[in-house]
Every structure is written in C-alpha cells, then in structure tokens.
Image 1 (spheres, one colour):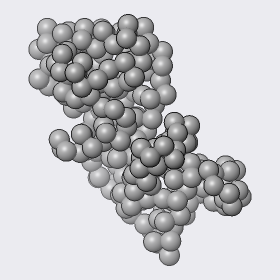
Image 2 (tube, helix red, strand yellow):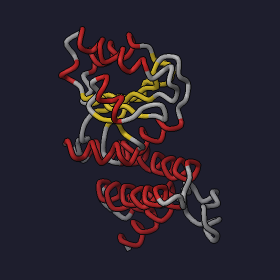
Image 3 (spheres, one colour):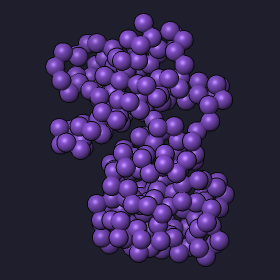
Image 4 (cartoon, helix red, strand yellow):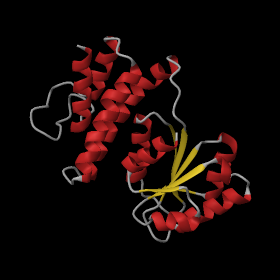
Length: 225
C-alpha cells in the first residue's frame, strides 16, 4: 500500500498534476487524485515525510529532468511538475520540522537589479525545496544592498543569482565585489544562472558555479554537501 501511494505521487509529479482537477500531460488522469490528495493519503498511511520527498518528489523530478534534456518536455511541463512538488512540500514542511529532519543547507535566491524575469528562478527555488534545501526567495529586481544585508543578517550557505539579460548580468559581478568588500565572500557560495551567463562568466566574476538549469544546480549542490 505504501509503495503504491509513493509510486502514484511520483507519477503525478511527472504528469505535473497538483490536484485531481488537473488534466496531466498524458491522457487518462483527469478526475484521479493529484499530488496534493496523494500526499495527504501518504501521511494518513504513516509514510515517513522524508520517504515521500526522496522516493516520490525527488525521484519524479529526476524523470522530468531527463525528459527535459531529451526535449520530450519543455519549460511549461517542467514548471507544472515543479509546482506539483511545491504543493506537496507545503504539506510536508511542518512534518519534516517535527521529525527534526534538517535541511541540507540554506539557499537564498534572487533575480538581480534591473531584471524582472522569474520563471527560471522560481523553478530552481521549487526544485531545491524538493531536494531538501531551505530556500528563501528574495524576489526579482533585487538590489545589491538588499542582498548584502540579507547575507549579513541571515547567513545563508548559498546565494543563487539569476539574470536573463546581458545588461543585467553585470550586477552579478557587482554583488560579488560587494560581498568581498563586506568580508562576506568566504561565508557564502555563489551560484549564477540564466540565459545570459555561462561557465566562463562565472569564472570571470569569481562565482563558485554556473548552473545551466535547476537539475544542474541540484547536482552541484549535492556534490558539495
């Protein structure tokens, strides 16, 4: 019974179905339980919350990542699956805390000043939550001052910076220089991502890593834990 529920949650993550009202990517799912209903059923069946996260949510998103890489899935499909994961994580979060299951690390994420694009950032944030990280989304068009103050006061382990435009990506270098000036650079690992940036740019500005997408971010993070 437990494995059946886990399998159904995983499958509905792959289908991007938050609730029974959602259609799903393939036919035949309409009217059946979605991730929200199935997560609650799993809790009622006394399935451990970390088992739901690892064997259903994370495993489901790994399949989504493979489908995205092979171009079977596109950004809207991946976003739907990520939102299904977020629905489940909202239900599981207090249970994970009660079970004293600590997050792998604290990750602050922001779209830099002058840039209002947030789809990629939002997908990364949701994926990281599902992978076991505490995520704080600072929003879009975030000033260097706000980011520095957050790092100074809240001490996250990681900082993720997103930029879609070649004009706004320059803010990433400005933020890293400000971290150095405030003697904070060695206290936080900086990941950058977005259409405008690359491995070469990450090296140029002194970032710790360039993340092509949410899946590469998780791989790099898990390798560093």
